[in-house]
Length: 109
Image (cartoon, rainbow, N blue to C red; front, side, top):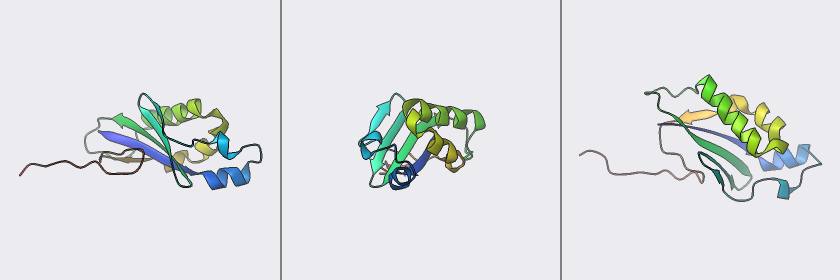
């Protein structure tokens, strides 16, 4: 299973947008079915379960677009920041949770 993620800097957003306040940014984990947004210090982390696609780790264009669009649907006031970071979407095979902790389990012996 391939997961998608990208991060934004809360400090950079607030410094460049006088219309936004800290209360306009996610302060805790926001979960909406397959999408998770969380704060880890200054970082606003967007994560989602993506797709089964063998061992490929490159973002699939269609799924990446859906991921960005869903991020904007949930946080429309952050659209310009989300779109400007769309090229920073990362994919990985490891289980990825919103607080950055790896989920590990027993492997075959």
